[in-house]
Length: 340
Image (tube, rainbow, N blue to C red; front, side, top):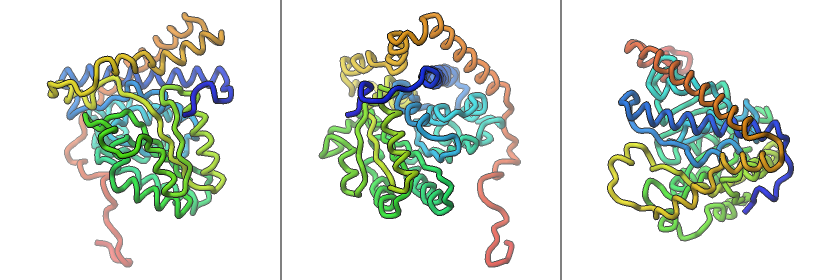
């Protein structure tokens, strides 16, 4: 497993930006939890709290115009890639100023301005999309790669295997990034697989499989940077497995509905001691790169930024029902020169 000690130095400026983006995800999700509890958000919400280093480390290893796909635990991915927070939060509330005009909601965010092609509530649903995006980049010779996020549960679904197979055959510049938090809803990955590491499956498709500590943002950044370089050079895809952990339940509605404890309390507490935001903050302090006050000022700045985003979302109007079918599909659809 790649750890933070194994990686090359990253500039202080980049590390501070990493901290900023992780804080954005954390504060964004915390406010989403509060807003949903007030009954202002339709449906459930799946937070990325605990996953911040895996997400930001990977996103900051690619360019803004590189493609990205995600899954139902989706707020962190566009934030990690640089999306504006106001339109993202508005989308969670189903408002007209949302990135998808209020049609996507919490589990189906897309923001083409940062290369985010969309996320799906269907487990493994976005993995084939990333292969297609990678193939398009290869055919257009535009130098882009496709970063594909998914969870450990998706690694047991058919589209995962089909997608890795095609990507390997076509040598698409796709980085398959598994956020393995150990549980698909409440079912342990240890009971769902006959192998210990999802990365081992890469060998069956002739691509590298790499395991990285998902709480160490610099380690994640290093591993994904190598995978990106491999993809851009025409050598094909890479499977990266980040060992991480979600600090909250699978979803916030589940927190209210489930009356049993499927994760040992000690296990949750042990992982919470490796909070990725605290780990990077401690590293910056040890290096003498920042002061405690500067770190607090950064967090205060991010918290204020998120508050502005929440207010933007709450002030945004609901979409007009007459626009329900706009931007859903191409219409009219030309068929052999005939419009119908």
